[in-house]
Length: 378
Figure 1: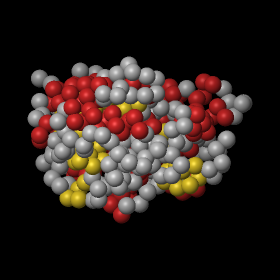
Figure 2: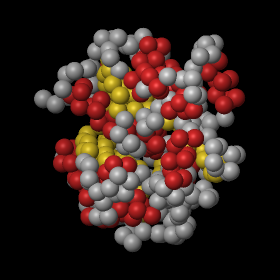
Figure 3: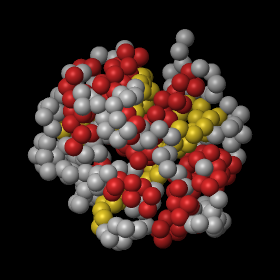
Figure 4: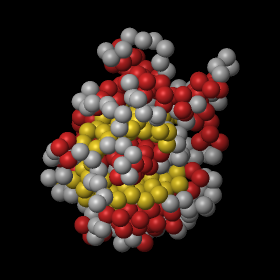
């Protein structure tokens, strides 16, 4: 018999707040973390969602007085600590870390060794801080990393390798990432507008998010969510552009539904990737239509947080879980007029709705796509 696997606890650290509750309140009020930022590298100014370093330091000082941690490390430790304090870490507890670029900003210092910026080094540093005995698992698959890590945790628990898992995701806005997206001419000259007719690119952001995943039914209470299906398909289309037919995303969602046994008409809500690039948003709309999901309420949170790279999928899952708990749909900020050729039911303004089943999707460079289905525990 296949084990049921649940997410029972969540947290996030973003420019809108350092816990889930403050982030939720900010979203409901329509606040955005996106602001005009000063010169970085060759960019004179740009819009981004960046965490205030002084506020971060003040919050981090309450959990540790050590000064050798990078900004991203402080964000990761801060987001994990409240979850870990509630649970017991055993030799059967997995630590899964997801990111796109990790501590790559360390390489801006010529005296820094390349090894210190390895993702494995960052994962080991965070896991050692909390005393994990298992070897850290790193999931780094472009911008699907955060949501893919949920699927990895689920499968490992169901296979009997672990009993439970802490999944954490994080990325920061660095000169490397900014210059990379700028070289693609993919950065918007204003706060991003997912699915909007006038969208013209991504806005970058930084955040960390964490969830606790378990198969122990005794830990499951009202407000938890069961992970009922997942799929991850690469469309092998282009290094930086998705399949124009949405093939990879289509098959990923199809796979998740097949595993779950859920009838598509029971789906309450889709938390989409929605980067506000011309190709991503169009591809997603096509994939949703191919699956008959065009009438399901859908939103993108990029207008609030920007694109937080490998953290985005986990961060947006945390918010989607909160939406389900409160039966409330959040506005797709930045949207005014539909800008995709296939019809979708984009959420325009906050609204109340019973949410029992929801879907989280993500797509990224290299053709990667991931979809995970969730069921709310009553």
